Length: 210
Image (cartoon, rainbow, N blue to C red; front, side):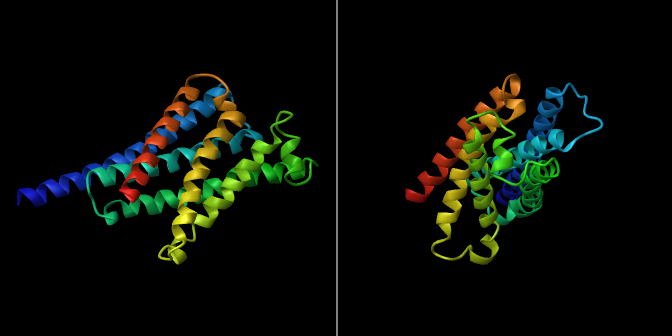
């Protein structure tokens, strides 16, 4: 009975921690975004809205990595956090599509054409290539959504590995282009995301090759 109770408490802890972490990092992203504009957000434009969607997408994906580490440390079954990954995964999918989608639509409406030209004319000179890193990462993340179909194939781990690389690329993408990351406290939070993500990846690959 004690063993069953202990397992239950660990499961409850992991579920609560995962959802709480996703909520906290999402709140941090919104606070950083709103503070960038001094909370003068109305009437909100596409140019003001699209950055926070990217911040939210990355923040929630980062929480996925931390939740995976927690699940591994506590030696829990995958099904324990399955609802958390499923629902937050839906949110991430919507966010990673809306983040560039809104910008692409607005730039086209404003007469700047389509990417990559419209991107290059939006960012500072010399940073056009960083926008393409974001596009490449988006394609990798979208490919990862096919895990339900191809997840059991022997080659699938290469797609998962590419998504890990894409996370690191997005960290750099956000650091170079993110309005909320050019100065202030959120830049420090972003540095913490980098360090902890590298730690989570080290944990993942150490377990694989152990």
